[in-house]
Image (spheres, one colour):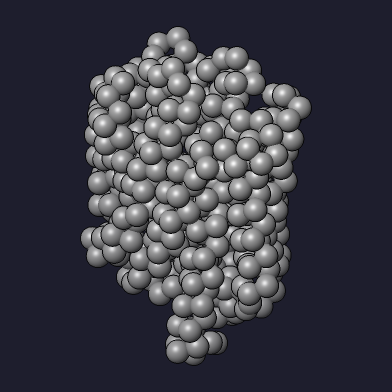
Amino acid sequence: MTGHPERARLQRRTVTLLFITQILGGVGVAVGVAVGALLLEDLTGTSALAGLGQSSAVIGGAMLAIPIVRVTGSHGRRYGLVLAYGAGVIGALLVTTALYLRSAPLAFVGMFLLGGGTAANLQARYAAADLALPANRARQLSLVVWATTIGAVAGPSLAPLADAALREQLAGPRYAGPFMASAIGFAIAAGILWSFLRPDPLLIARSENGSQSAPKASIAAGLRVARANPTARLGITAVALGHLVMVAVMAMTPIHIKHGLHDPDQVTTIVGIVLSLHIAGMYALSPVAGILADKWGHRQVILTGIGLLLAACATAGTAGHNHTQLAVGLVLLGLGWSCTMVAGSALLTGAVDASQRPGVQGLSDLVMGVAGAFAGAASGFVVEYTGYPVLALLAAIVVLPVTILVLRRRPVNDRPNKEST
């Protein structure tokens, strides 16, 4: 078994590497989020289908969890993360090609594979938890989530610069530049992980638990474990429904802003600012969510997240075209997502041992992705036919069932310091 000082050293090294790559991956993901709906509305001519672009990226990240889980279970975190970022590179290049060819179908395929960047960013939080002690698992996980702040906040604001640079230097089409930036960010992140994420944290955690062989990991195996583990199920549900609410409201905010403005350049700038603030809310205070989850308990932080999500829906839904109020609502939306994501992820990770984690964590990301994909797809149609305020109201209603699950009597072993390592 690895001694405590050596384990601590490996944990610090792992978190440092993940911190760096999360910045790069955050740029890639955030740039795509900032202009994805706008470019698809441009290619398809309707805001209803624009929502399907975000949906394609989310479902892509969810479906890619299936091969990522298998690769991670067999070979470790390094192989799984590189596979995910590689898919993101291909997706970003396909979207760029689609803009040159004016091909909406190819753009949807590209957005699907672009979800690999999201999958990598999400899986990285679990890599940070593999060697963390139970008493500070949520804190360690949240540090990697927080690292995304730098790239994710910068991404939407860099989108206009990347867009202008490609159009001016290479006479490229509008929105192509940001996706080229995504491809570069994902590629560098993959290269760093492939070169330096050694030894692999998941493999070390398995060896400490006395499991030298790699068990067969799959989503189906994760589902079997989750069925028998109510604590893991709560973590999965909190993460998924928090993500659903966030995606539903966030995906259509750029379209809502666009409908109140006429200058395309002004739309890109305001969308960039609002989404940068939203993404700051998602990631900037995630270490606080982690510290509180370790100190207060995961359920209390999940409840806090639910309250923030409800406040966000009320604020954004009543903002009209007041961009300041809309930005406040999007910040609250990000904070609510952060609480449910950090506390829910730490809860389900601590509920199972290291040999079961890839399958259960992959299941969580799959369920989260499907929930987000549904939200992204439905949000476009809701806004098209009923408006943005109704979308915010429906999103608020959806998150309420989580409250019932959280308030159920807490199992004896559902405490941060009692969880399995």
